[in-house]
Image 1 (cartoon, one colour):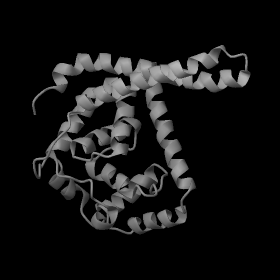
Image 2: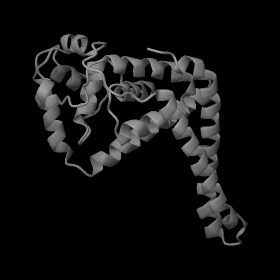
Image 3: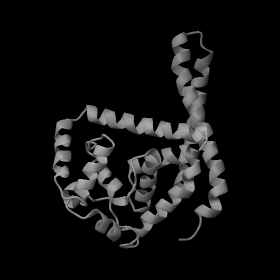
Length: 235
């Protein structure tokens, strides 16, 4: 793993940790800590017990309003790392979870981690072949045996449904990133020639952000072209 790849993973980790801290700041965490205590009481090998153990191992608590997110980590076998977080979103997209957070997180990861595209695509295909788990909640499945439920869900297609191609989603996202970045740079450009320090600072950061979006989008499109034969494999 080179320095750029390590840096990209650190950006994703920092982004997720910051998002969680912001969410926790506006919620009563005593309530969610109490829920974790309840999960600890379930027998070993159950979803409830394994979710609590996973959170304890990483010194975390349930994320308010996203409790089922931690359930899916345990049920689907994805670790709480930057790469595995994006992998799980690729699985969920293939599983039919067409939500804004799922699209946004996967696009974010796909742009920053082009070296993991083949892995993301395999997770996407696995999600297609698995039973839908988007509606699973800790309250409903805490007492279920983790291994048995995983075997029941993974790779056992329940019904046919319309599936969006992952490479198509990434391509549209990259194009949007390029256009958005270019627009932002053009909008900020006049202010960069101002003699006012406030204008320079205020426009400088968005201009740099726009350039990052543009370069990232172009880089993604370039890598997507190389991956095209594999991404269009019929499964």
